[in-house]
Length: 540
Image (cartoon, rainbow, N blue to C red; front, side, top):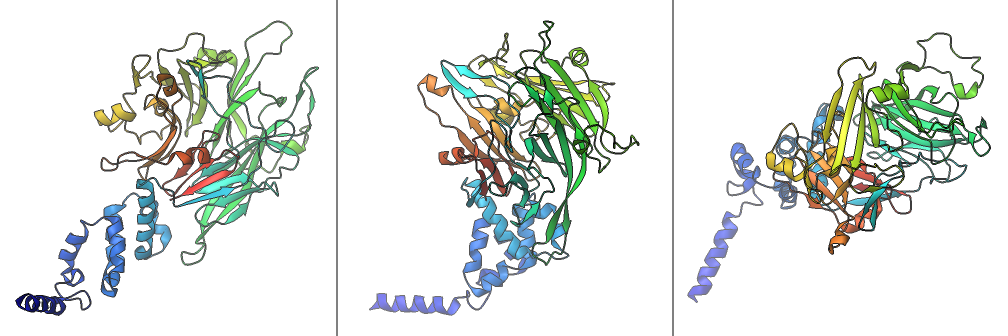
């Protein structure tokens, strides 16, 4: 009897002092504002979103715009929404923005895709067709009869600032797909009679390198030459209205067109060229086997840099004789510098028969040549004297090639079986170096140490959103089978924080993204290519 009375008395007390529905001082939302902020600051972002579901009073308190703004500053200060707050209007609705960002980082930090989207694109054509990418060097990794790809072909798509450019499978038209608004925009490029070799979007400029499908002239008894061109398009995003849907739009306009080789190139797997561009400059390195009948053996090499800042409607592809070429030299792309094989040899950049060039990069006034050698490389273009470990280097020069030369290299510490890079991966985390941190890889002058940062894995590709402090990296290990321990390839998420360790995605995600060994994106998504050649968009 006494137990029942005590129980009734306790229940009555709880009912009387329950403040969840009336917002009294015992309720969290009824506390003074400064005390309330001190408490909620200790809650996780997921808990803060769940608090909205407790009651109406809690929903009103936890959806307060000023509180949501403070929560964004506390939990997600580096997100895209915080960096671009001025584009969201005079007073953004932070109460609706915060749960979306919290959901994104929940999926990122748990390495779980929120949504996977597929797009059918035009595939590679071995003969005449809409797509024929430039062949990579003929070299691969070989260790104890186990092989792995060392350098992949260029993907059939490109991505920058949330805009995905590709060629539709059915219509074969080039489109630009805004991944945020899911709106598509037409690219004013007619590819019906062209074979695209490479497309790249960077610095607000889309470059499409292409050739004519029909040969221009006969090179010899077995090969014919196709005229090769590059077309540049300005890609600009304009804010329409912060309250409209979508709040911004894209405009893609033709800037200029130029011939990238004076005679043309055969469509084969022997002649190769690598390129890069910024908003104002375009560089192309050309490597061709020597077809001279006089016994010259070394391949032909050339590096050319154009200034492409000036728009020009003239299209040399429509004027084979050059009769309508503009007379003013300041209209359209102009050659800034052309380096012959002698110049490249003097600068230490000539590749000869065992090329190690991985890519070329540009900034506002310099070009950078990234080279890469590996101890276990095999194939026609592999080095006859391989390095002790995995060797990467970068050589940088001004466009004029007059002035100081920048040189950076790394061969990783350790022996032939264990290599640890002192400026990336585990060694960098131990040394805690600010200058050589994991997210300081945006400047093109650094050697690509990210390739060998985690032995025994070789980093195939990475997506780095440096401003958000987010990195997604894809690594592959081929030699562990030889050590009687099978290790699957892995894709993992890393955050620029000691509180967020590396988290590994599920193994099933690798074939969904890494057919061509390339991923791209930012904190919102990562884009790759699946085993069937479709573009895969993993949204967070």
